[in-house]
Image 1: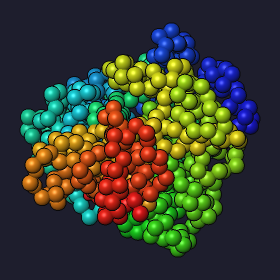
Image 2: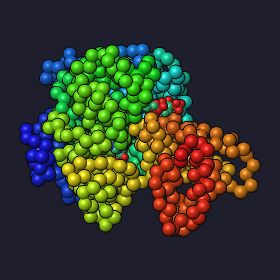
Image 3: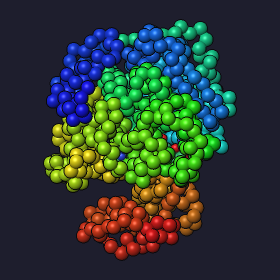
Image 4: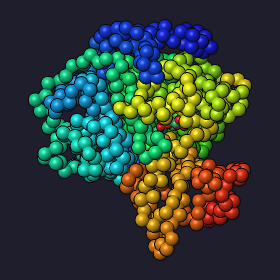
Length: 630
Ligand code: COA
Ligand code: AMP
């Protein structure tokens, strides 16, 4: 092995040799011809010429190696009052059968399948079944409304959609079918068919011409085998928020995904095959793709699929119950989940009710981790608590304490240093690295390592414009921060209009588009303000058209309802304020950053270019009336 420094250096000096060695850990149908191909730079590829299958490496290889009886997936749902253990053999068979179903309904190699499902085993089955036959899945998070689902359907153009009758949230059943029907009627590209998994809590009405019941679909089906897939083919598309209301279709390349995730399990998370690994996220997000479904299975671990919340299902001891009951060795969640637990159980009384000596480490990501949360978790769990930083586009951690290599000193507020394979620089506006301790744009030197996005789905131009243009030779992460004197990274804020609400990445631009649709709204701005639980929540400012007589309360209720209906409950858009004007520069740019600082009671400088400084005082007073800017 070697120290972190040695391994980091090896990966930097000879990435091709480094990743070729890591790739030996997978089972290939045909070995690659070129480890890294830069001839179409910036559209670089890893392992070109190779043939490999994702599902084979997740399931069949373990079955063939004699681990048929090992538990692959534990489904634990306090919301459905259900628990189920599925072995590698059972999961392989269920996946092979569903691959047969997909084929029966016309899905072929390279076709897209949209999956709009809750946290149930059938979702994992559907994802792996796609990869088994070389179809490309695109999972859409259940908290998005019809309009957002429709945007993804229109971009991915799926042949088939897999969904369920409902999702479960505390105290409520969320009917998915009306949301799906709404999305299909809004979309220009109608799928040929939809396969619907009927849950016992709610039976959805099926459209005879288009919908097929999950169980009926299995009639007379021949299980399908794994096909050979080109190493550079996409395994999935995952849509993520950009600065506009149009989501970006992040493409995940098959072999890079396999190699990077398999490597990360031992080297970053420090887990071994056979151990239980739990990412308490949702399959609709990248964390769910990489660390609920794929990486633990590639590594032969047992993964936990938890359909519940950190609190309220039934209480703030839920996570500790799951860890102890299923003997979880490594856990991953978002800081917001820990804050929710800490709020209800500050002294950790519920933690002490469980035997947690199986737990070796606790990983956190998805948003900035405040030092208080990290220190509280360390004190309570008495294991290394690792803040690590990455994003949908990269698919796996960029900066982390790599526990499988060497535990470096933990600095609360920092996700430690670059993971081997990544080169992080903090740049100024002229693309020069800034001195240690100075803030700048966190950027990743090209070429990016395996697993990271090679492009956006059928949109090379947006890929280049969004990520590769501002800092030539680098990928722009959209995050700002510093590298300190010890080489530790600190991720401080975004450089764009993305906000992070309870670990969920959302576009304020997308919300502004919805607010602007209201008949009485002349102009609007949405910004993320600090929230003790969710990190940030959106706040809308509305300027009304002249002569509007509608009651302000009514307009605010309308826009809150509109954001929920068009983007979804996950946006958590609950506060809006009507103001006379918005502060702008003389060239007309809305000063969102200043309003955000005022709302958060932070220091701010009034820019010389502001058109009307008095408006800031008016906004401050309005914010104070609703509990901000204290
Ligand atoms: N389907 C439908 N609706 C959903 C949903 C889903 N899959 N997931 C969330 N929602 C809804 C919720 O019901 C809620 O609706 P409401 O406004 O009617 O209450 C809304 O979306 C916001 O949900 P959530 O973000 O879960 O907030 P919450 O207030 O219900 O719970 C936390 C707060 C902190 C407990 C919760 O945000 C949490 O567990 N966060 C962890 C986040 C995480 O795992 N992120 C992944 C990155 S690692
Ligand atoms: P997503 O693509 O949804 O995973 O969101 C990625 C974004 O979340 C990053 O670009 C950061 O802005 C933020 N983020 C994720 N993890 C961290 C972390 N450990 N520290 C700070 N910000 C983080």
